Length: 549
Image (tube, rainbow, N blue to C red):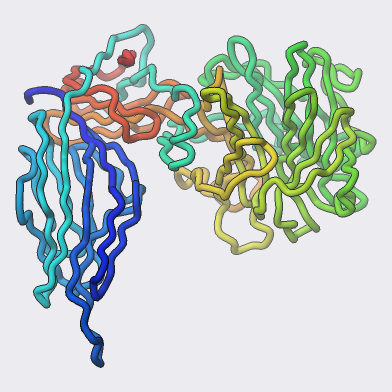
């Protein structure tokens, strides 16, 4: 190989006028891929204007690019292009120009065509891709592939030990919050190898935890969560522990007890610069069975409402919302967000009648907790708002809301997570998919919350279960936003990670023999922007640090 290479792809707007069957191509979709980026400039052909007789003729084929998800490229380089309309099957060819060295067309007789291979030479090539249907009608698009050099990858062996059959790569945590990645839905989420990340304590008959909330602290996080956590009764309570790295957890203890209430859960905590903690949580009073929202505070994180931990929740802790006449009679069985900005508090809340959703995420503000005043709808959505984080990027504010859908009747599909963006924190845009369960153990997911550190979103914590959304056996799982690492071993096989181990590390299965030699390519946390590539030699049971360029 003569050097490290990369490609990026851009589809430019094109339109054909005066055609019998006009084809208009969507403009500007951007992806970046393994070893490179492909810049695509294209236009579609058509015939002269004619009178349509019955039956109408089959339209000519039209070449279209795939969606962003379908256009993601694996290693080695592979890009799929699609043809629509026309009379299948199709025949594909390069009608002029040529592909870069070591790239070729594969599967050239169907609706989809792959351009694939491993570029080995820095070069720029322009070519025209043509598709012909069985009626002999054709369509063409021009492509330009520019193969450039990449920074050589660097990894250094560091102290620590991976499992005997694994290779650990460190230094892969996400960088600063990038609005472009979130707007374009380009996020590389890696499931944690621990299934679950945090299990209930085995001290009692009732073991069920979920609704995690990671409060960023100096030198780590304080993790709050709700559930039973090894108690002798099935009443939700709020618990807490600490972690420096999400690899180990210490000091797990009870923070809020349910007392005479049926359940307390879904804690949402904000800490002010003076160290005081302010918490919203949900509670269920036995008389009416509705889940309501409550508030408590702590000057130091060890006592709440003047009582040392554990504090016993009271109905009198309930918040009020002036200007929302339906608030008192609604059910709020979900995370309700407390947010601080400009000396004022904001609450985002979601709810409705029991078993029937209200259909919106609402917003209320306060200067004197726990009394709020309604300000209107923040997002038209049947999903529950569970977290909101704010980031300042190049002098502009960005807000990210995490939401989840909770089934209200049996037989509905498992829940999944979505997110929504805002520039002012008052009105949020339409939702984009985040992720659902990663496997059988967390097929049914609930209550997502972000893990943040110094202006970065490192991951999402959530509750997960294998059986159904009412099964009392939840644990806490994690999905980490990380750089993408792909290793091509010398045999040509690709070595995907087995998963993330905390927010900064990934584990890879070691091949037979215990050592791995090949080419490693590292992409940014969007999963498509190449950062570095080059040869590596790695050994099972050892840890290595990726040195960012």
